[in-house]
Structure formats: structure tokens, C-alpha cells
Length: 88
Image 1: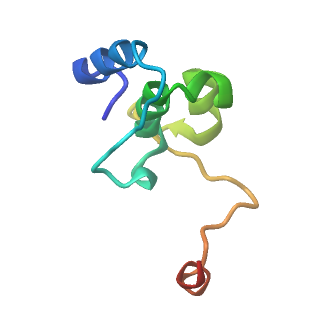
Image 2: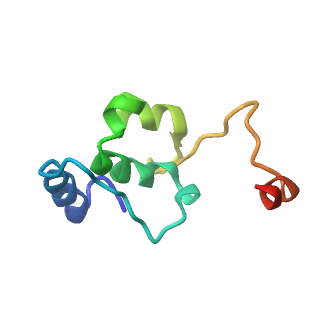
């Protein structure tokens, strides 16, 4: 779940042994974008698509007063309305 967790570190190393990888999580991804960084690294998408962990965190998170990563408010980007989600 977190970048520093032992399980995340081991999975990132293990994932390098495989050509095809799928990221699975029991946590909704929108709860905190910082948690998605480990899954993206395991699938091999973090560096090529987002420019690495630091670039990803700079774009999609900010640090709160306690130093924890929280979702960044993005200007001009609004979540889909319920009616839009229902149609897709």
C-alpha cells in the first residue's frame, strides 16, 4: 500500500523478473494517489508514463502539515457527475 512497506519493496523487485505484470489492489485507487505509485512501479508504468515516483507525487499529491501525501486539488479537473458515471 505504501512505497516504503516491505511488501511493496519486495514486489517491485520481484516484478522485474516478469515481462507481463498486472497490478491488483483491494483499495479504491482514488483514496490517495500516493498509494497508486507502488502499483504503477510494479506494472512497469511509473517511470515511462509518469517520469518516476517523484514526478508522479509532484503532479498528483501534496504534503499536508504533518508531512503525509494527500491528493492535490487540480484546477479545471472535476470528478464526473453521477449522471455521467451512470452512462459509461
